[in-house]
Length: 218
Image 1 (cartoon, rainbow, N blue to C red):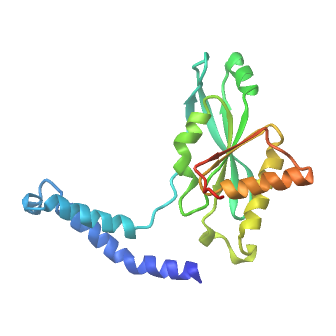
Image 2: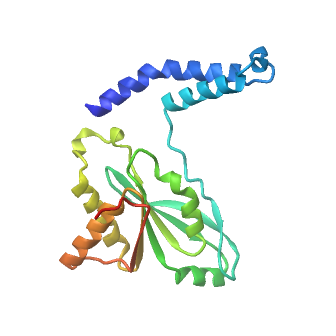
Image 3: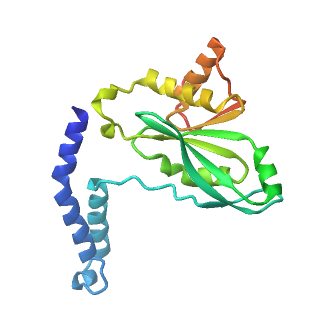
């Protein structure tokens, strides 16, 4: 029901979003006479803000084709985005690095494995593109690419906190005990729960757990 309301709202606001975009350009285009009127910049900015609030944002690509290795190697290696697990609500992505330099390959083989658990809170995992690219210099990198829930067929059921925790547990089990887990913002709680449950049940335990910018509790 919530997603139906969201789609209805988005459809109703679409014409206003396009109108706001056109109006913003009317007040900032160098050939428009309205550009030279008083308060033109502020009017344009106001319309642009209205457009951004009402527009529908498409999911961008990670677009990481290559990365510069860190350390003493400094070689540029190719990167291929691979889907290692495909679940209804999430894809586990791996950014596989390739090189024809034997020394670089040997160095990459011994580098640590990182699982980045991206937020499931209204924006896409590609927001962490720069984080992934930086980690790829010295790590084997996996990331959770969450699916927009409104795109998941109803036959797959709901997605609650316990499902979130189960997904993280499955991803850790799939990668293995050599994984280092980094949770960014919102997923710190389900990641902590998943690793705690694994510890209590004798499941796969990561080498390290890093929680970045998560909610605090007392």
